[in-house]
Every structure is written in structure tokens, then in C-alpha cells.
Amino acid sequence: MVSALLRHAARDEILPRAQAPDARLKADGTWITDADLAMQARVQRELAALWPRIPLLGEEMTAQEQQRLMAEEAAAPNGPGLWVLDPLDGTSNFSAGLPVFGPSLAWIQGGKVRLGVVVDVMRDEVFAAALGAGAWLNGQPLRVPAAVPPLAKTIACIDFKRLSAPLATALAIRPPYASQRSIGSVALDWCWVACGRFHLYLHGSQGLWDYAAGSLILAEAGGNSQTLPGEPVFNNTLDKRSAVCAGDAGLHAQWVQWLAANSAPSP
Image (cartoon, rainbow, N blue to C red):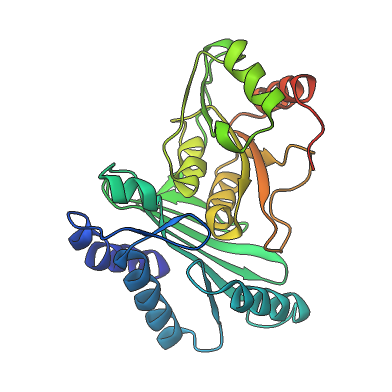
């Protein structure tokens, strides 16, 4: 039901605005469009009609609203939980006409991500997962591929601009992988690792609405993740988090080892 709700809302609110995104800059220097606002309003309204006791935390809310909602969820571990929504992950792609973007929705309850849905609008792909029940792509079971290349032949998804200078330099000069990409949508980054389109992933700083759904999808598909310091990525706060991921456990261990040997201490 949640997957269908998010997919239909995206088709109605995001796609029709793709030819004229009307992008403008927010105070923090990131982009916002009418599609972001329309999508957040629609999803909030439809979720409230179905689950009126579960509030929604959206990326386009004020920081004060977001902090209040997270504090309330953390203070009530047996409560109904909290929806966390990025109405349009990849807004800069959307604004520039690059066809990689979509909404990301997670349900957090009791300090855990229990449900996650990410929609790739242009490919009409719906990634979903439920805690302990598995992951799916367009309704079919999703597992990370069993066959993987050696580390030197992998494709990595790397966001360079949020990494420390020593680590970014090491990756640029002597990468352990064959080639790298950056698609501009954190939520889809996680999903593409889950389905094997990327073998490795590294991002230096992402928000809860960026990674909550995708991190559950990767985990339920059998993938591996941690922060650069080696902690779980999800920590039930609004803190920005780094992400080190791989579908295969062996590749993940090699990737973590290489990063540890080539990076300065990270916060």
C-alpha cells in the first residue's frame, strides 16, 4: 500500500513538472522546486488519512519542526513512530533535466527503520523493504548479486565533495576500484548497490531522509554498510552520517580496510 501510494504520488506530482521545474535556492544553498513542495504535501495528506497517529517529518519542513518530531519519536519508543520523507531526492538532477531522481519514504518506530520505499520516477522502479521480511524491486524479491568481481574490477559510487581532502586525493590518484560514478541521488545510490549496479559506495555526509529507506533496502537485500568511523549508519537522530557500503561482505571488508589505510581521522 505504501509503495503504491508513493509511486502514484510521484507520477502525479513530479513527472508533470519535469519540463518546467521552477528551481530556486533555499537558504542553505540547496535547490527546491514546486515538485518538492507538492509531493511533500500530497504524501503527508494521504499518509495521515490512512495512519492518522503517525506524524511525518519531511525534508522541506523547518529545522525546528524536524528536531521536535525526532525528539518526540525518541521519547516514545512504544509509540506509533514517525514517517521520514524526502519528497524529491535528486532535486539538482531534476532541475537540470538529468533523469535520476525520486521520493524516499521510511517509517521509523522504536528506534529502528521498519519500512522503506524509494521510487526511481523515470525508470518506474519501486524499491521497498520491511525489517526482517526482505527487500523487493517492483514486487519481486531483491537480493544483492551472488557473483561479484574482484575489488580491482568493481564500479564504485563516490561522492567526492563531502570527503576529507586526504581521502578524496587518495581515491583520485590510486583508486582500488576500476571506475567510479556519482548519480546525484543518495536514496537511489543505496538501492543501486542493493541490486548490483554499484559494487561499492562512499558518501561523506547525508541526511536522515536521504538514507533511512535506502539503508533498510540494502540491509534487507543482504548488503553491508557502516559509517567511516565504523558505526551503524542509522542512529535515530538528524545527525549527518557518512556511508561506506558494498553488496558483498568480502568486498565490503576490503573496501573498509582500504579506506582506513587511506583516510585521515573522521568525526
